[in-house]
Every structure is written in structure tokens, then in C-alpha cells.
Length: 196
Ligand SMILES: CC(C)(COP(=O)(O)OP(=O)(O)OC[C@H]1O[C@@H](n2cnc3c(N)ncnc32)[C@H](O)[C@@H]1OP(=O)(O)O)[C@@H](O)C(=O)NCCC(=O)NCCS
Image 1 (spheres, rainbow, N blue to C red):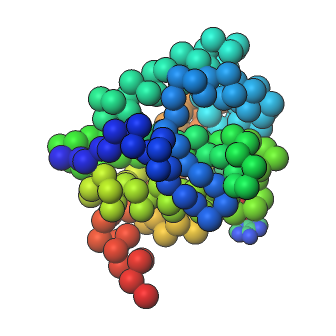
Image 2 (cartoon, rainbow, N blue to C red):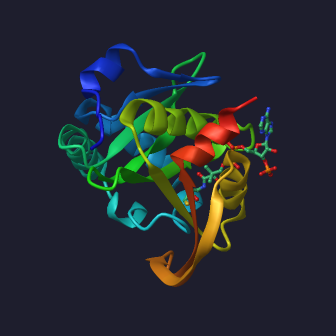
């Protein structure tokens, strides 16, 4: 089984990455989420299939509300990334498709365009992996990226995931089929990485 802390606990005591704060995504974040997604639409569109469905602030609010419910039932644990210092919302990182029986989940992430190129996602994703393995008790974390999404593939490589294979035409996104490179990290991989 997975041990999922209540989201209120993490709102009071957020996860701290070196240059960002990670807090569970709540309904109240909807309007700000809309601003960030809308400002980076052309940047996110080629890689994230949900972006065209974010047509207005209500859609973002509904997504944020659904995220809060999904946290409560333990299906998905999504964090708003806020830059520190400052506190501006810069993206989302989280654990999707949580499966208690298999103690598995999937890493997902995106950054607003202006926040890229500084190592912020690699740091935040590493903090999220520590949460997955050390707090939630995950046994396996999967991650997949389009085979042409080189920035994302470099994040995955820096995090130390192991390549498992290619899922052909796994996603219809940005008006074309994309193949996915699929990777995973086991708890034992994480622990051996952590060792000095
Ligand atoms: C995937 C995504 C989050 C990667 O963003 P990113 O900024 O490249 O990743 P990081 O924040 O980890 O930054 C790493 C980059 O900053 C550079 N960098 C600069 N200063 C740095 C520092 N002090 N520390 C670490 N890296 C630094 C690194 O060299 C690296 O650039 P490189 O890959 O060209 O070598 C971003 O491209 C994105 O949101 N894309 C659209 C959505 C998407 O594709 N999501 C993933 C779907 S699978």
C-alpha cells in the first residue's frame, strides 16, 4: 500500500526543493494556473495533450478542483511549484496514476517557458522522487517522454532513471502521434543513487 499524507499537512509544511517550494495543487490555485498555462501555451502544446482543453479560467479551476479530489483518493499527487524567493507559480510536478497494490506511480512535470534552463525542474523532480520513495513508500516510479522531447529526456537522464523501451505512437499530441521513451526507477535504484 502507499502512505499518502493529507494535502493539508503538505500545505502547512511544503516540500522544499533548492529553489522552489512544492505545495499540493488546490482548487484555489485554478486562476493562477490558468495564467501560467495560457502564457506558455505554444511552449507546452507540442508535448502535453491536455493543453488545448484548457480554454478558460473555469477549465483550470475544474482541473485544480479535480486534482485536490484525486489527492484525497490517492490517485494523483500534483504539486504547484513556486519559485523561491518570490513565490510565483512556475509549473507543476507530481505523481500520476498511483497504484497502491503495486506501490507504483508515474512522474509528470512541466515548467512555464521563462522558468526553463536553470535546473529548477531537475531539482524539483528529485525532491518529488524523495517524497515518492521516502514518504509515500513507492516501489517503482515510471516516467515517459516523447522521443523528440530532448529537454525532458535530459531531465530524466539527470535524475538517473533506467531506460525500459519505446512505446510506439503512444500519444496524440500537437496534431501528431509521438513515440514515447519509457523509463523507470525502483526504490533500490533510488537508494543506491542516494548512497555516497
Ligand atoms: C521538460 C522541461 C520541464 C525541462 O525544462 P528544463 O528547464 O530544460 O529543465 P531543468 O529545469 O531541469 O533545467 C535544466 C537545464 O538548465 C541548465 N542549467 C542552467 N543552470 C543550471 C543550474 N544551475 N543547475 C542545473 N541546470 C542548469 C541545464 O544545463 C539544462 O539545460 P540543458 O538540458 O540544455 O543542458 C521543460 O522543457 C518543459 O516544461 N517542457 C514542456 C512540457 C514538457 O515537455 N513536459 C514533460 C513531458 S514528458
